[in-house]
Image 1 (tube, rainbow, N blue to C red):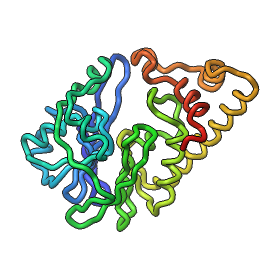
Image 2: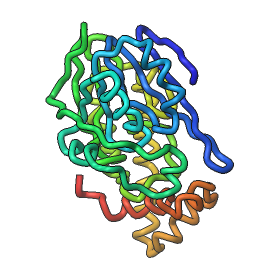
Image 3: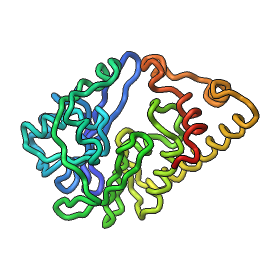
Image 4: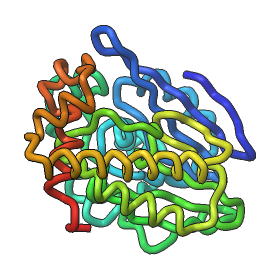
Length: 266
């Protein structure tokens, strides 16, 4: 684990490895609120931090296993209330079901009982806006502190140049969510996989421009009669190892398909 602090925000970085690649996942502790709970595979490393930290409650950006993995332990051992988007509560209460490679990478997330967010949530000193930002996951939220201008973006950002997504993600919906976030006044951004960004607004603007240009390129080629597979091969010729390991749950073809099929739906 690696700990860092930015403007009163404690950053906790964990890393997991699968075959020949490593993935990073961040959690944040600010004003008594823990944002996300990392992966179950990292529980033993996190317990000392949890035991010595003064945590009032947990806020989850969404219910993927790398964000909810240790929530059950925090609930059982520290009796902490845990908040999530209302439509994710049922999934959290059930035994997690996801592909074997994700179980190997992140561990198997135990069930837990979550509470629903309202439009905002109160920590010791601050009020946090809960911003519904679907696209990566339908019930994904970001948390914004309007007083400090700090945005906790979950998995909405990750990288300015997206080259691979999960099969359930939607690029047009992600674009709409980024535009929504950019309508708020914020600067600092805390991402769940790329960490702290001093100029988060600039990073989100770069991502928006990239995705808008990419969408235009996809539509232009599709209108000329190219198939989705041909467009994918032209725009994303390199196939990441994760595509093979995940049996194509992660694949650039999902970028192409969602741009073509989901445009106009948001």
